[in-house]
Structure formats: C-alpha cells, structure tokens
Length: 143
Image (cartoon, rainbow, N blue to C red; front, side, top):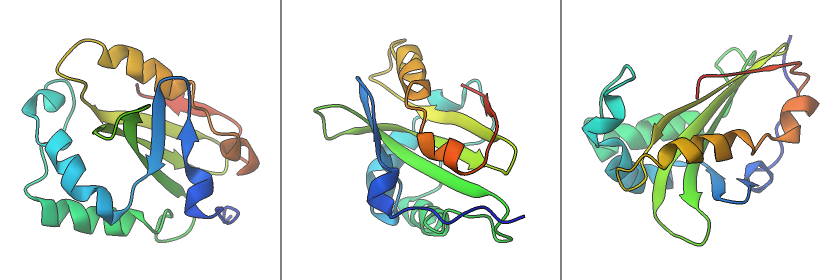
C-alpha cells in the first residue's frame, strides 16, 4: 500500500525549543561533510565517515525523493541546527511505513561535548504531526 503524498519541502521543516530541523537537500552536503567526517561519531554506531563531499552530495540527491523506490516507505532526513546559529550539528532520519515510523539520530556532534545527549531528547520532542497524518500508528526510536 502506498503512502500519501508529502507536502512541499518547506512544510517538512520542524522546530522546537532548541533545534531547527531542516529537510536535507544536496546543498547541505558540504556543511554536513564537516560534521560527519568526525570519527568520534562512529565510536558507538556502525558505518564510517563519508569518503568525500561528492559522495555525500549524491546520497542527498537520492534522499531528495523522500520515498523508497517502491513507494512503500517515506524517507525523511533533516539537518540539525541549534536555534539562532548557522552551523549544522548533525542529522535525523525517519523511515515512515504504513504501520510505524523508525526514527534515528545517527550523527549528532555538538562541540565534542556530552550535551549532544540533550539534543537527542530535543529531537524526540520534535515529533511531527505529519507522521500521524501518514497513517503510521507508532514510532520506534533508536536515539
């Protein structure tokens, strides 16, 4: 079963008391490369830093479709920014299926401090009512 259409990209932007969540596009690749190249992000998760900005740009171009190739899953990806700042500090991913949404924060860096734990909580407070509108009945989080 296919999921309903997504709103325009500007309507996917989210905000809470600490963070701006900006839908990722290819234009975010250079700034996100600076965040994701930090090897400390991969200490407790699988994966490795992107090889270069061009590879990350291609990945983000693919993500701009915001759907799996078969249309059964919404792929939502946001760049994270502290409110009032320009620097990106990480990203948040959500895969929305008909019956649930999986949400992960695979790369959050905030000046190398433990305060990124508080940012993960702030991300969770950014629950988007559009998940409910998509027909998803539950959320599973890995952050």
